[in-house]
Length: 77
Image (cartoon, rainbow, N blue to C red; front, side):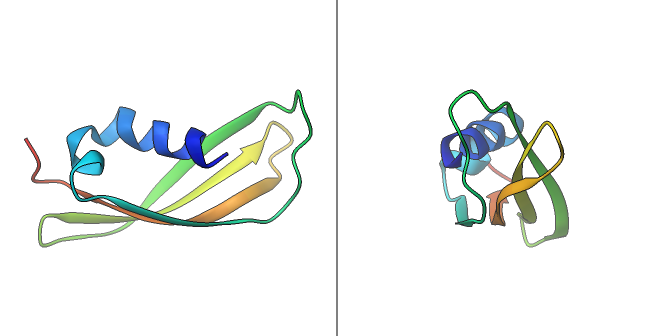
């Protein structure tokens, strides 16, 4: 699940996440083999070259299985 969220952040923010980004999550529900998952994020703050985000992973039934926060640099080349 964490890898899924990190991949989503890399795809959307590229080097802004890889160079100076962070992620802090909690696993809140078990996930069974074969469960389809979707990573999501919402920007909560922009400023000082950084975007703060709420991040979560949910099942196709819209149940959150992981939740937390992340930050990415938005001034990275």
